[in-house]
Image 1 (cartoon, rainbow, N blue to C red):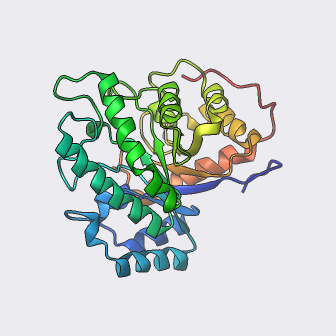
Image 2 (cartoon, rainbow, N blue to C red):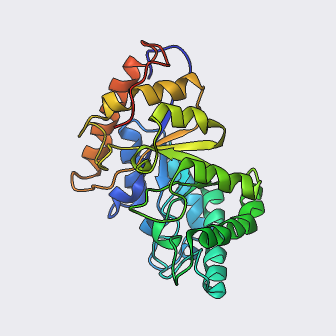
Image 3 (cartoon, one colour):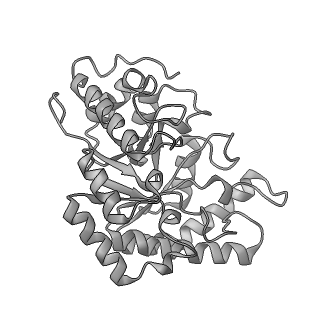
Length: 296
């Protein structure tokens, strides 16, 4: 797809904008739009619990992806209901236990679908509550992640701590904080990712962040900075230097389109975004990798 020299990126489409379509329809839309993978929000496929997705059903989901010529890029929106009431940093030990027990089931779902990563954003499920401090919340988060890290590794899955802006949560707002958490836990199954939309609290330009934390980055989310599909804003110019930086660093993992405005509909979102991706890729390699502009 790229006209430049070097690796070709692989792209995935997050499935929550396709709710209401059956799995086969979702996979077909993703493939026809030019993506190589689908990223799954578990809440979009269930009524009460991922236990509804039986071993047979999961096998059929994998076969449907294969038939469409795509793969599972991983899971995200991990603690979004259903089921309700999941929270991993509450001082309530029983709620934490139940939440991490369910998280273990999500790890199995990811492994069964062949997904390599689980993007741990879920701001409402990790923010401070009951008067505890962000540091106390981080302690509970680290303990919980440590408790499931071995299981994730056994299933071939990495759990990626997603830094989120302070407008979403008060627990892990920057890549620096995510890196600190990774070092604290010290397990290969616990890493991070980069999402353009979630850089509200960052001070460095995007390419600087990517290079600085590249050893920990195992996934990338793209969308316009206001959460719309690629092409609805300035991403094709604003993100060019960042994609060049990823290419220079030989990034070969998934880049997933995750949008927050579903109103245009999944077909428009998928097709318009892929058209923008192709425009960006045509320009990669045509300027020095260190000639980037500051992030907006």
